[in-house]
Length: 192
Image (cartoon, rainbow, N blue to C red; front, side, top):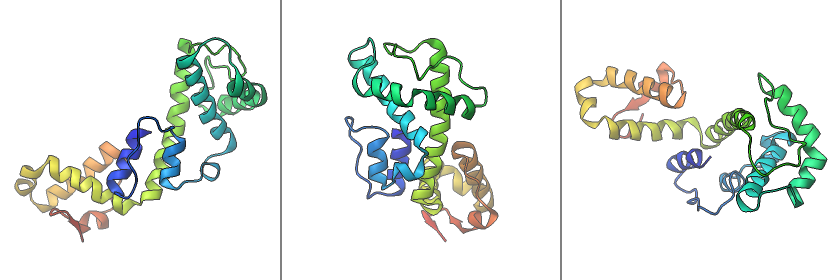
């Protein structure tokens, strides 16, 4: 999440720096001006809360769930269990959103957490990219590409540099540039 946000900051310098103590993902969404309740379904929002509260429980005190986490488990555990059992391709292996034993993550739960985060971060990535806009992303990637390949660009020539840039965008950021978008790229820090 912090990496996504730093990428967005490169494309939009008006975004504030993210401090270490800020809540992820809540503060990131606030800085980006995104309404989490409109971007994610309710069960995904509950999942963010569950993961944050469970992490805090393990880090700060361990043992049985208490307070907000216990309430979330009691009121939302069944819904979260059903949601992620159907949403994940292979269902859940070990996490039980209804369990009040929250003092650690068992190995089987870690696999589920990785799969859940993967699904959520794919969606977050898409939302952030839509927010900052493809043109800003291309400009930012172009700057990085030029910095990394400064001496090679002249040697490659315009067409080969553009093809390499298109491949760079696809491989590193899964962004496909159309031939029209590639034609607009000028390797002097400006997009035509």
